[in-house]
Length: 103
Length: 267
Image (cartoon, rainbow over all chains, first blue to last red; front, side, top):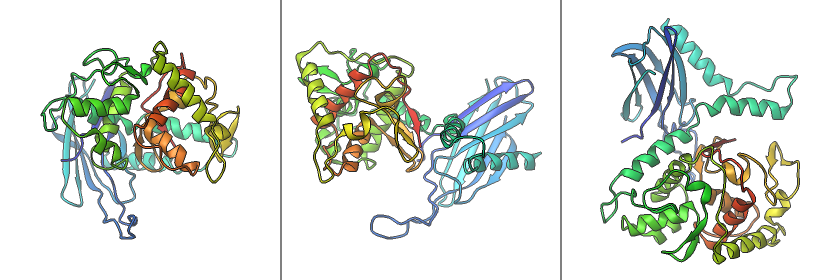
């Protein structure tokens, strides 16, 4: 199973700054290994962010996004104690979901 | 609204490739780039993984590392990193963080320490050692280095480390001191810390383990030192070898009183 994400959601006024760090190799499919063989592409394709279960962001990613990607977004209407969930799916069918409480 | 968020996110991803602005010096721009990325330091991921591994029951003995003695008694993690390497009575050796973790993995969990040390860094169980070292070092973030030098062996390791630091050899007649014994030097854009004296807070010994953005890897001090030897065209001294621990004692004692910023963030 994939390693956990790190999600922080800080409330300021009626908005929350959500910062997400995901653990993923994000292989572009362009690199070669020590034996000269191409390392197959392996990257996150879709990212979904939810606020108390309601989707607030969906993103489609490609192989150009860096390894261990960092994403930051501002969500309106978040109160302290609300749940912010993040889910990613990669092109090999791997997926990971984590949740954090807004502070 | 969804569109705006997606766009601002893309903008953030792109910032990393923004060229240096005309008025700023190259060093300032690099500092700015580092500050921007430090907020999302992927070392956090290794720290979280390491904390999980510390508490997880693993190995033939199905035990966690929570009874591991890193110098301040079994199970104490906070503040141990800034007092390592130190002498351990049970192993009768001076050990740094990584070599001590190997000892604990062997005695508590029944894993083969020799086998792990021989595994290339970045493969198999070595990844777990890196994550554990990141977690332990993070528990001492912001604390000052205070390596013990009371035991005779610790003093001997300091002297050996000093000798190794200044020893010139290899095909290029290099020593650590060739690059790290003068003020205000650099290789390309990398400032070289002067390690033969105290380089200050969060520099040199006080800046590892660190996440290196270029290879996208978490590096411990063991990896740093072994790779320094590779750059000097020496053979690897080996993971958790006495030579690397001795150098660690020399660098650590020199950094006495400096603040540890590990896990740090490097280019």
